[in-house]
Picture 1 (cartoon, rainbow, N blue to C red):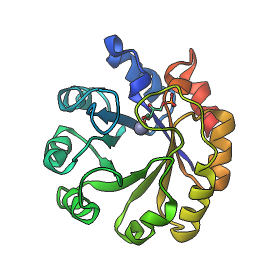
Picture 2 (cartoon, rainbow, N blue to C red):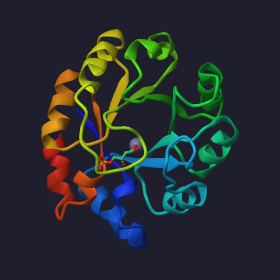
Picture 3 (cartoon, rainbow, N blue to C red):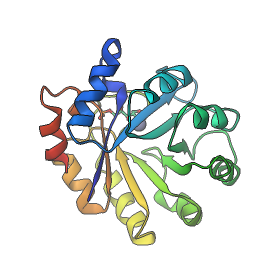
Length: 209
Ligand code: DX5
Ligand code: ZN
């Protein structure tokens, strides 16, 4: 069954507790946490203290998406704050093999993400070491953007190469684009505005599934 990972970026930050209850009661399994540093992407979101605080009131699987220039120095802090999986970008300034090993040494699942301009083939050699790949279907940095269908071929290539891997897609996901992605082979759908922007998140989550 597909997993739904609502992106906290689209929540009302003044009401995080009730926002998290809405999606937990609505049937989400994962919570997608977008960390942005204003350098790797032209936006700044939230960081370690926020993750630490919501860990205390939210039982969901914490699916971290790091959009930061160099993830390595911060991995332990994110693990201690409550991440279950840590996903970083292939395009960031780091040695991907070293970062994957460091995440696993912290006892967490490791994921790698690719931007719309990066080919799926670039991560094929890394797949045996990964728990998850995150295919971006928008340029990372902002919620509420339009889905870019060039992610679909990448999902197909990755699914064929790794039948058992978690393949996640992020950006512009709604019931219609989500269906295209699951048909292509994705099994984790990240959705920000579609879920948190809904007056009935349970119905939005059901429609994605
Ligand atoms: C964008 C983030 C996404 C974003 C998705 O850089 O990685 O997770 O929150 O938002 P929607 O679903 O509104 O496109
Ligand atoms: Zn994201």
